[in-house]
Image 1 (cartoon, rainbow, N blue to C red):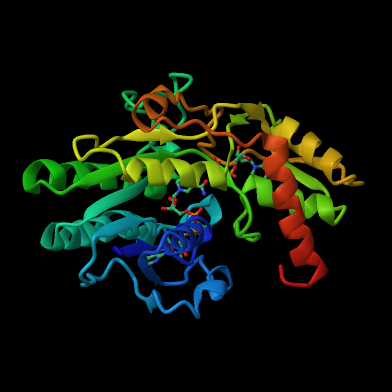
Image 2: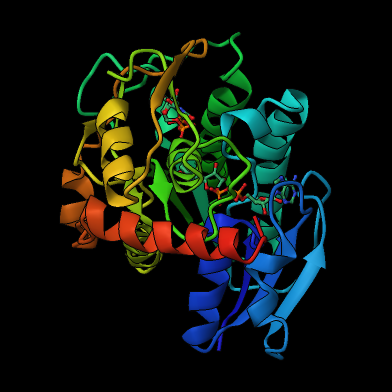
Length: 315
Ligand code: NAD
Ligand code: UDP
């Protein structure tokens, strides 16, 4: 049995990681400051004696004897990470330094949840891991993008300087049950709007593209990466290369929910990337991983999840 620390464990992705690790017979410490996460995401784990919930902010050091660390704490949606940009940057950078310091002391293997946002508004398409990105260092998204880039830097410096065993994954847009309905991300926004027959809010003309992966595919990538030999550090892209425009997504969700919603067009936020699609050759080669869940299949489960929350007044 391993003792595993999951930072951001009460969030969307972190809660799924905690659940799977417990299912596999590990002991899990879930660390969260509940900025965007919620106890509802992990309430079903609370009576498991091998699950420990700690309210803690990772910008403050934390000490525990652990074998592995999944560093997933960080607000991930533009409205949340822009709410307190200085805190976002501190979470990515100081939080990573604290977790790397812990990993160094206890010789734990540590994974960083990096992001496709390190590529910024990419000029290379699809994005490969050797692309250095096109990021505005002083814009409204910089606290997140540059914070995650700086986090990658300290991960690699701790690896080179102190021999810390690191695993860096660059996660592309992910969706599924337990997404936060209030964080303004496109899949949850469109589904909740469509289920309530409210206007679907497309920012810009909807021609910008994204490639969304379903949570289960991401989880398979995460755990495959953690099991790779120590000499494979990443960074490795984990995402679904199936690319579509935001307008196509709106139309699909309206169709799948039989909604009466009409599309309304609002301003495109500053620095909103125009296109995004992962090249996943490295993940295929090193992790033997490819995403398996088609968009419609994943959307169906996610629509059911939000429909249930709405019907129970739990949104
Ligand atoms: P989320 O907001 O649901 O989860 C983040 C969790 O971190 C929350 O529970 C929050 O309360 C916690 N947290 C934030 N700041 C903290 C701090 N200072 N100390 C302790 N806990 C803190 O977001 P998510 O979608 O689950 O994202 C999880 C991770 O994956 C993030 O690091 C994010 O950057 C990364 N990621 C997510 C996506 C995506 O599409 N969801 C894409 C790329 C990368
Ligand atoms: N978006 C949109 N309407 C919404 C929410 C988002 O058109 O109600 C757009 C947003 O401008 C972006 C894309 O959808 O182009 C994905 O946004 P999200 O915040 O989900 O992810 P990110 O921009 O971080 O990739």
